[in-house]
Length: 345
Image 1 (cartoon, rainbow, N blue to C red):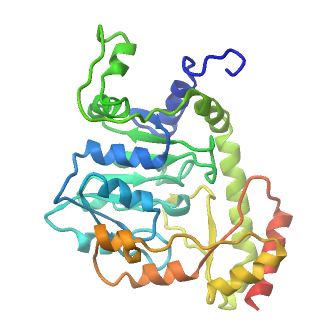
Image 2 (cartoon, helix red, strand yellow; image 1 turned 180 degrees about the vertical axis):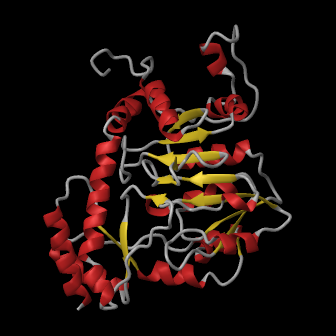
């Protein structure tokens, strides 16, 4: 592609989209510059606006809530499970009001958040979830829209990028318009219209062919990447069982029916910041994760909290992410586990 000098006329984007459609079992996948843009397109498709509410966890990326706020709606923060940083269906149900228009299901760490029984449209924040599933169905293909990330930190990456997955074929035409500056250019390029014109307020939300070329090579290796990360996840889980038995940490819990993708291995510990600081000189790159959105300046300004969110605050203050990447070995996992045991001691 670089040698030809043609950075816009290739078909890598379509090849990626077709592969993702097969993986997710959806009608159409549209590649985007980021998962944030995919989330914004999803809420536009639901025609959310001022006065509407969307229930979501507070333990998530700011992008989840930003997509809702940018259309004038209100993010309503509900609590998460004590066993996993996933939206608690009971807390979500209690947060629903007559103004609630949708639920944002965040699949933290590639682990399924199941809220589809609440009778509301579900937008999946599946940023971390490629290659994971719920009862045999791929995450990102369960809700009215699924939003994936290909950021540099994700299992499959092109440096930055995202995808919008749509199950309903009736949403595809408008999604194409919104993604392409509000025009019906996609129809024109397919020969379905003699010209294209401006139809509504849209944005430039196409992934470049250069990014798609990088992404395609990653997608072709998705099964191997996912299997390797799951193996490392399982190794951590086995090595740290003794520390959990001693009561010095808590390991992740995977809901029945969920098949994770090994994206994040985390533990819950006391004195989280001290543990991370103790690991730093050893070369172990441990980190905390999201600060709860409901207590952030923007969360207090734009959102609403349902309940105390005590579990969210406790998990956010005690969660430590341990390094997981495909180049690690089980020997690396052993070393991290040993250093973690020493830090906890």
